Each structure stands twice: as structure tokens, then as C-alpha cells.
Image (cartoon, rainbow, N blue to C red; front, side, top):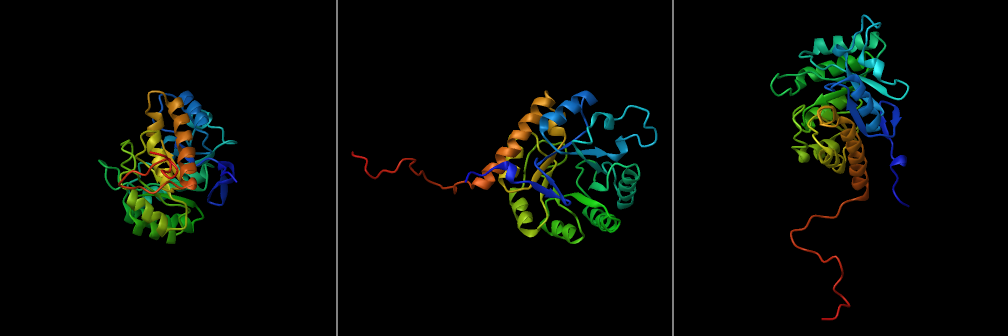
Length: 262
């Protein structure tokens, strides 16, 4: 029987999703372009930075006005937080404002690289899980930390492929493979995806999903790139499930030589 993507859902935080592409809502030239790109991506989960949402005056235009919440699951994120306390506060603000009890947890440790402060990240994860949040932490590609985050109750681990917004693609595939062997929760590549081939590589490795923002929003044509990313994630997942051939140093004839007269 042929493998079907429709029979291979992503189960995350107790919910089932058909798409394995998660997209962000920042850096677009306009809310209208963002809305088109979200539709083109086929995604069912979109991240929104709590600090970018006007939580006090809903009468003013907001990015939430351009997101169909009947179609998309909101994933508030704690972007811009540099301490566990800041991130915990942002997550609670988002929940109190009715955004969600899900959170993409970010605790940044360095302004230049935007690498996570994993010590603070782990501490915040423990607090938020205890408070009833579905926590999806953005972390580095360290298998030991991934396991600690799972033990702390994270619903998934989200290792970076490369620095946020760098577009360099997956820089350490070996570590991602070890992470996938080390944890039982979904592994979602978060950060560094620049183009469709980067997304396909992450999925071919066996990652459960890919999260991206700049790779789509920063493209010359975000709507077209969103479509490309959608197809790449699907192709990568299909290739992973199909099982690639083993790499070899020397050639192997496509047509058997037996029975060929010389």
C-alpha cells in the first residue's frame, strides 16, 4: 500500500494536525501579505509574539485581525525575553489575554547570536508545565538538554538548525539525529531554515516538523515561498518514510549487467 501523508498526522500537545509546517507572523511587509502567506503555507499552527500583540486595546488594528483562529491554532511565543522570569510573565500575559495555554518558550542568552539560555529555559519550562501550559521550548541542538526538557514536561523539543534568521539551514544533522534517538516527544527544527531544500533536509532526517518565519517573510515573494516550504516539508517527510538508499563510495549500475551480451 502506498504511503499517504493524510494518514501520517502530527500529534502535538494532545492535538492532531495534518500539516508539519509551523509558521511565524513577524517581519512581513504588511498584515495582508502575512495573511496570504499563511494561507499558502497550508500550516495549521502559527506563532505570535506576545509582545507584538496589543493586549490592552483590542479596538486598534492587530495582527490577530488577520489570522483566522478557526483555521489556525495560535502558538504564543516569548520572543525577546532574556530571563526565565520575563518568559514566564509573557506566557501568562498571553494566556490571560485569551491567546492560548500553549507557548513557544524562548529565553535568549545572547543578543548577537540569539542562542538560548538553556539553564533559564529549563527553569522556565518546569514552572510553566506546573502551571498547566503546553510548553514547546526553543533550544540548542544539545541532546542532553533535549532530554532534560522532556523530563521537565515539555510537549516537544525545538532545537535550532542554525541561528535565528540566518538562513543557513541545518548545520549539525548528527546532533539532530541523536536528539531524535534520545527523546520520545516530537522534535521540531526551529530557526535557520532559509529555503525549501533546508526544510526538506530537516524532514528527511526524521524531524517531526519545521518551524520558520524569516525564511518565508524575508523572501522576495513570501506567498510563493510559503507554498514552496509547504511542498518541501511534505516531500521531505515522504522521502523519510520511503527510506533513502544507502550512500556508497563507488557506482552501482542502475540496470543489472546479467543477461546483457557484450
